[in-house]
Structure formats: C-alpha cells, structure tokens
Length: 274
Image 1: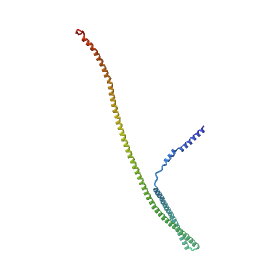
Image 2 (image 1 turned 90 degrees about the horizontal axis):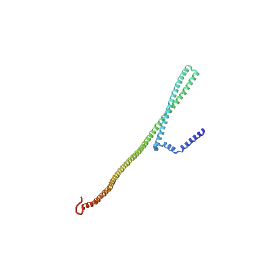
Image 3 (image 1 turned 180 degrees about the vertical axis):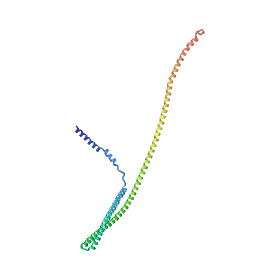
Image 4 (image 1 turned 90 degrees about the vertical axis):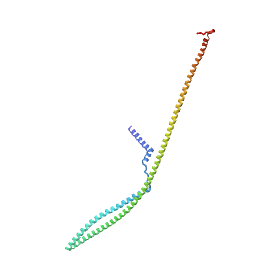
C-alpha cells in the first residue's frame, strides 16, 4: 500500500511538472519579466565603448609608469648598496697599499692587486647599475608621455560622449514633450467628450422630465375629463327618474280632476254637494 501511494504521488508530481511546462501562461509570464530596456542609439553606445577603452588604456599606461618607478626605486637601493661595497673595497685597497709600502713583499703586492681587481669589478657593476637606472628613467619618461597622449584621447572621447549624450537627451526631451502634448490633447478631448456627454445626458434628462410632466398632465386632464364624464353619466339617470316620478303625479292629478268635476257637477237641480 505504501509503495502504491508513493508511485501515485510521483506520477502526480510528474504530471504537474509536464503541465507547467506545457502551459503558455508560464512562458508569457517569463517573457514579461524579461522586458528589455529602451535601446540606446549606436552613436552613443560606440562613444561609450571608446571612452571605456580609452580609460583602460590610460590605466594601463599609468600602471606602466608606476611599475617603472618601482623598478627605479629598487635600482636606487641596489646602487646604494653596491656603492657602499665599493667604498669598503676602496678602504681595503688603501690599507693593503699601506701594508705593501711598509713591507714590500710579493704577498703584499698580490693582496694589493686582488683588492684592486675587486674594486674595479665593483666599480663596473656599479656603472652597469647606473646605466640601468638611466634606462629606467627613460622608460618612465616615455610612459609618462604615453599617459599624456592617452589622457588627451580620453578627454576627446569624453567630450564626444558628452555631446552624443546631450543630443540623445535632447531627442528624449523632445519625444517626452511630444508625448506630453499628445497626452494633454487626449485629456482635453476626453474632457470635451465628457462635457458633451454630460450636456447630452442633462438634455435627455430634461427632455425626459418634460415628457413625463406632459404625460402626467395629460393623464391628469384625461382623468379629470373621465371623472366629469362619469359624473355626468351618473347624474343623467337621476334626472330621468325624477321626470318619471313627476309624470305619475300628473297622471294622478289628471285622474283626480274628473272626480272633482263630478263633485262640482253634483245634482241636476244645481245644488252642490258638500
């Protein structure tokens, strides 16, 4: 059971990974995250690369000058040490000469000759060191001249880069102003459209109100007329009934009149009945 559960979990994990790979939403999100910055013109990029290269050249020339100066310092120290050795050899040669003068033996003469040879070799060595120091000084001067030339080139490259950057910034400013003007025009047009929509909506609302008022007035007038018509139609039958009621009275009066006539007529002898 545990093995089966593990296999099922592993299968689910692999399915999820495959689905995540296949889904285009992940690719689009990755593309959105790696949005490129606005490209700089080639003139500016070339000027910047030239400036960087020239800066490296200046740094290398200055490094050569510093290295040559360090070599010269080391050479000076060597010359000082060798000069000290030469002074010692000169003192030794003078002492041996004094001994040879006091005791002119072959051994004393040989000692003087050996001391003189050592001093000469030391003198030659010192001359070589001084010649090397002169060469090093010349190298330093040449390196300094290279530094001055490279610095001039660096200044020209910097001026070129600054001019190109100013031109690019001006273009960007012009584009920004144009975009701002467009945005302002769009905002104004949107405001005008909104005002026109509001006016039209207000007119429509006023028209609706007037139409509803007219309709309500018409409904009221029609309702009043209908009520008056209903009242008139209701009163007409009452009048008819009144007329109907009056007519029987007339008939009864007419009917009664003959009795009165009979009473007035009464007897044939001219007497009236009481």
